[in-house]
Amino acid sequence: KVKAPTLFFEKTGWREVAVSSPAVQARAPGESHTPRAAAWIGENSRLWIALSVLALSWLCAVLTEHIRRPWVNLVDFNGAVWSQAAHNILRAGLVRTEGASTGFYFGPLPIPPAGYYLHHPPLLHLALTWMFAIFGEHEWVARLLPIACSLASGVLLWLLVRSCAGTRAAAFSLAVFACLPMELRYGSMVNFEPVVLTFVLAALCCLRQWHVTGRAQWKALAAACMMTGLWVDWAMYIFALILCIYWFARPRLKMRGMAWLLTAFMLVSGALFLLRIEMLRPDALQSLSDAFFRRIGSKPESHIHFTELQWVEKIAHILFIHFLATGWALAFAGGAIIRRRKSAGDADLAWLGWACAAMGAMDFVFLCVFQDESYIHQYIGYYLVAPVAALGGVALDEMVAWLQARIARRSPWGFAGACIPCLALIIFCGWTGIEQRNALSAQFLVLDYTTPEPPDLIPELGETIRENFPPGTNILCNFQPDYGPQLEYYAQRNLLNNVCEYRFWRQFLGNPKLQNPGGVIWMNTQGAGEIVANLPPGDRRFVRVGNFSFCIWKPAANPSASVKPPKVGRS
Image 1: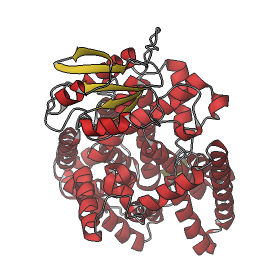
Image 2: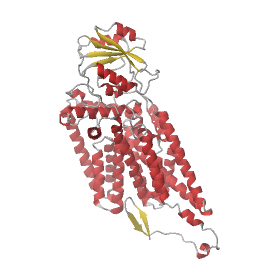
Image 3: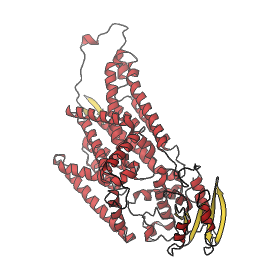
Image 4: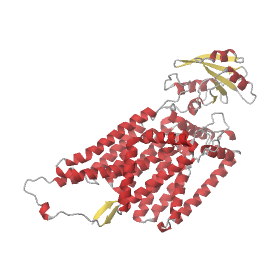
């Protein structure tokens, strides 16, 4: 009778083992006892605990490497948006804003209804608001939330796999999780994905504990995790809906009560969210509806055009570069092992396979239904990191068991021969993962696509704009060919980007709807001289930001602010 580890407790049961005959067990005096060497690295050895701690430490070190970096990279788009939403709540007040997002509003108070961005549930930016209120408005504070969630996801994944497949498989799963480029690149991104994945894994861990112990409180905790996740982002709705459909289709599981509870909560939560945003902004429902149909690709006049074949090629490329051939090979091998052992009656591994299938189905629906969004945003496949890592851990665990059976029992040091290939593979995955993450990282360029820019150009230029223009100024810029909120976050002013020729300036300046205009002209462009020469009367002065020269223009009727606004967002 043995004790097998579960998530937090021990499960006792009978296990059939093969015992050698006494004749085989007998050995001559002085003969080495090689089976002890093999047992030293058993399935629940402390060596695998040490590997788990090392993998989690590696993940923490990689994710916190650039935690103080300003919002200057392409991946920092969402960080600037949700940090601005938290900043606006702090300066306008939680009651006045009703905790709603205004992530794209950089104007003065009070915030008009058009300044609200109401396409997502509010829990993410409310958590950032709370953290900013405690620690101050800094980039590292904002990144602390997704990093903490990524580390928590690693621990929850370890607990889930350990309950189903043992400590060794859990250690390998955590190691694969910490080496995938998708996790290394987006695990510190200030957005919904790292937070939602934490609630998904927490719900699965609680469901696993309910399955093992039968205690109702675990089922209640699982429901609480999913209900909380529903207020983080819409992806949790997809996951909860998949589970409900599965439970409705399998009445023998006796989970229909849970399914009805989650279904009712989804309907109530969705209705409350829609009612709330309609009260904040009269056209909120129309805006949300337009965004939904644009994201599923049914508004051809308002989204990037691509064929189904182009979409498949793009998604395949994104998944390959973020999981690499090694990650997919391990995942497919682990899936085959679970399928084989499920047929042999291994209920624990079958449960892990079901959990991986649920997470995979969630992301598959997300990718395929919202084709426009998955075509644009490379992080939509982020939720696959958990099932790929879990299946990869099962594959490496099977590999070690196979090597132990053939190598470790033949020599006192055979355990090293059984472990070294797998550890070397993990080291290779870690090296390729960090190299791929570095290769995919790119700075957000605000001047043009070819001019090299220093990393501190965005915050320094933003400070210059903020110090030279009063709040409420709408500033025309002849640079920034692609929109991004990074520069606006540091400027705290509304910027009209890519107005690169004077004929476009004339149209803007002649428009009576443009209130309080101003201008910033980058002087190293071909049309800069024409713009400066034809500007209406006003104050023109030239400043240098790094090695770049800019003309700051304020019309004569636009009074300057006598007091500079406070700085935001600098570490």
